[in-house]
Image 1 (cartoon, helix red, strand yellow):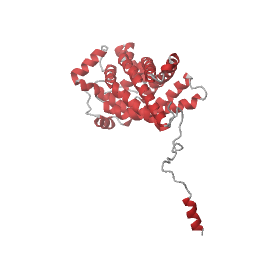
Image 2 (tube, one colour):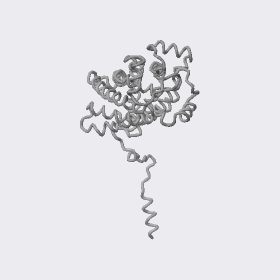
Image 3 (tube, helix red, strand yellow):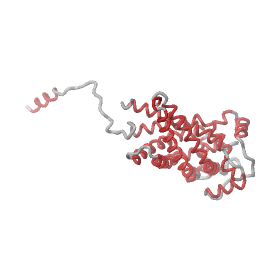
Image 4 (tube, one colour):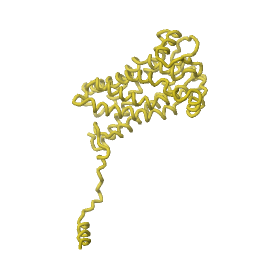
Length: 323
């Protein structure tokens, strides 16, 4: 009797072929209508597109900043470009791009997701607070630099003139054998020390510039949103790059020391590196490569932010939160 009653109850259940389970509870939205993994995917795509597109300019910057063991004259952007084309051809501008490809995606996934989560946590009722954007950017760069620094070191060594490494795997093996694991993070402190102010200026400037542009022309935000993001990103990238160039020079020196005639430092301290640079090339040596650095970061930030915001918009529509 009980079995018959159970079967009868089972037959009363209404089956819906169009039923779709709600999996949003497993990955709840944070803010902007996106989930954590969607921020990571958007950031990964944006970072990869940015670095791949701007890699030749980054190669020029590295060549200009690498300091040899003898007193030298300042290398201009033209000198660096002609030197690369003469010795390595056009492909020389892309040496090390594989290493950056391996590092940029994961690093920017961490970068943007940590930024978004931190911004949401600290902003509370004031999402336009520039201090919140700056602090969130610092948290983001500390985390992402842990992922990117080893591949950035490999990338920069491959970019050098007459590099002794045949490729990524050869460089990794050689560094591990000759210098140890510590060499991959020789510039980490300097990188964080550089990227903390860089990111603080970058994110706060970007958010402020984006807000101003939207207020100036609110009717065109939906139609020309990518222009707003690209313009704000370019301004933020250029300003942050100019301010932090001396620290970027120090970072390059630490990552390339002992390779292709570059100086090897007795200690990994910033003071030691700065002293050597100033002795050899004067204080202007601390600004070596500032032009290609700005030429890199202005369009790179424009590409990165417009790509990132476009990916966010795609996920918002996918989640049913698009306008």
